[in-house]
Length: 263
Ligand SMILES: C[S@@+](CC[C@H](N)C(=O)[O-])C[C@H]1O[C@@H](n2cnc3c(N)ncnc32)[C@H](O)[C@@H]1O
Image 1 (spheres, rainbow, N blue to C red):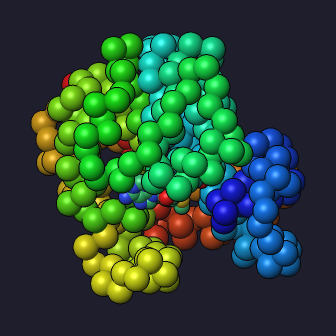
Image 2 (spheres, rainbow, N blue to C red):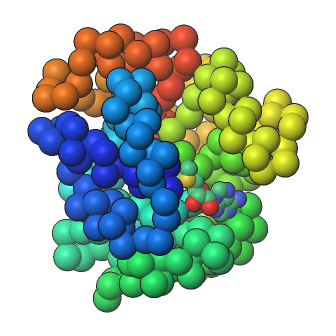
């Protein structure tokens, strides 16, 4: 609900940068008490958190659309989709969209965001790799995970990445990462809510080349700053304070958008 509310908030406060009508509609439709979030949403710091959720979506959307220029009929796979609708935001009328998450999330999606013609849900634990059997990548595939890999261990992410690379040469994978410090500060509390107290084995990346570069010879790796790598954020509603925090995010927190192209 936090990224969903964040995207609704960004649609309202950063209108020239970001627009997510699905998030606005869902926040009205779901039976959830947003009043605490509404209260907090007046603070500049909270708005920065929402801006983070929006930038992640915009950056990943940029990478998907870039892939679709060459592969307009590709499969677009939203791993850990939650209530995010990026698949439809990049829909060119030809792609096949897969939304992948735990069964309860998929059930909620079926009520709130029923699948369209070229859309399919897959209810699974991401690290149970057999879900990949369901993907038709015959016309290309772009996989993405927005705010998801932090919940997996490095070993689980590596197995998933290597399996995607092995099964789908020519595919692209895009995901966000955060460094050790950012992971500790941002994820510790979240993971604790899931009963996880030792966060050390959970996925974070300080140096993408060093830590991910030797995973496999068939990966071409690139990465950009999460907050400022794609957009300069000189736009309505974004303050100097937000740009300052963005530099901290991309700098000491090492927030990145990582792209892997598999050969
Ligand atoms: C922070 S939310 C992000 C949701 C969405 N990607 C977005 O940007 O709004 C993380 C999502 O990942 C899903 N998730 C986390 N670990 C997972 C796993 N091991 N298998 C399947 N889904 C997972 C959660 O259920 C949740 O929907």
